[in-house]
Length: 97
Image (cartoon, rainbow, N blue to C red; front, side):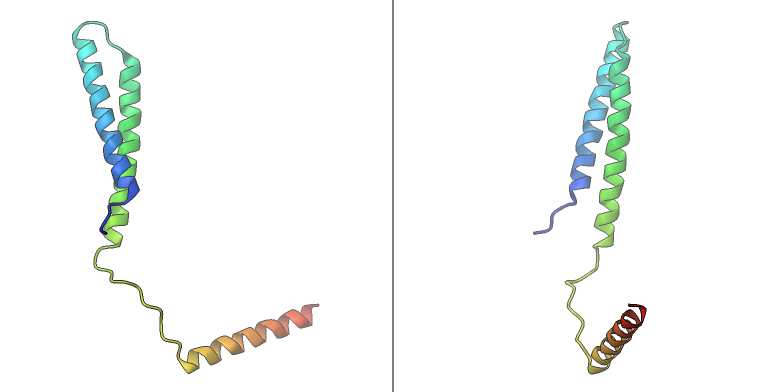
């Protein structure tokens, strides 16, 4: 299933809430009794929503075009190299003790 990142969803939700609170502030200002707490929370939610939305978009773009990751085939040369590195590490460890 192709799902969107969670940050993208929460980002949209917080952006929506921020815009709604900004509209409430604008309406309260229109009536002559502005509620600045609504403006503060609107900007907080808009900022948080924008950050989460951007992070979700970046995660979504990184995954585009990438197929399923297959484990690399273990070649005998690679195994031999890893084994020699392991032996060298163990020898250094014994010398220090």
